[in-house]
Image (tube, rainbow, N blue to C red; front, side, top):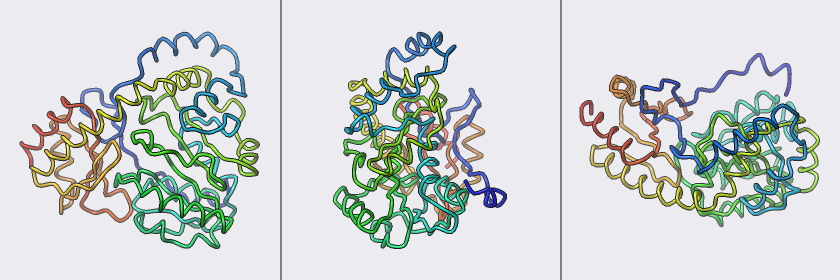
Length: 337
């Protein structure tokens, strides 16, 4: 992090409500968690009286099986955002240029700026056609947040190869990739894959994730990683969750079905809905969404104001949950839209 750049940086708005009395569709969190997660957490409580094993062997083994890489390539972090910060921190120097997609996760540009770098903003659907030469890093979000689409596998692989050939590190944010059947970029030369356990496993407060890299890039991440970078209970629950193949499979199928149901209902009510491979849908309502957001909130439903994403002015993002939640959303929309 560049001390001189911190003063000019700003916080990034995010979704999520801490009001227990509302239906929160502003954050993209699985409403279910793997069976037995609470028991694993409670069993690990006594271990929390001591520092965790900083090698995290069980967590790294589970992560390796989960994404299909070597355990030695896994770098445990306190969530996916911590993996993103770590990757940018070991690659980007003051003055460096970084290819950053928009509209996309706002923390990419913020972390580049905190490192003293310069975000070179490129439309998310044009990023894979960009020339990575003369950029220290390129960032891709797959599936992209907030638009939801997953870039074609062959185009993403070709871009990764061009980045490697030009000496540009590719940071692949795969926070939502677990909702799809697509293979991870983990293990490819010149790539840092950042993974989060927040979304798929419904555990945002756990703060567990990891990065995957190889070669000198991996050595940098391992050296710069904070000691005890994941709490003992978080590591135990994370390993348990990543090994629950049945939960992962069931979640993917359920999200596909519920996303289609949500899309059909929104389009029937006049929303323009973007294609999505993620557990959320981006909608263009052709007007400032403030009134809609407020009216839904008054009825106990919170949607994500997507105008906080660069380049969006008339958009809301809506999380895919279960049938009951979607029907509650439709009831609110029928009263106000």
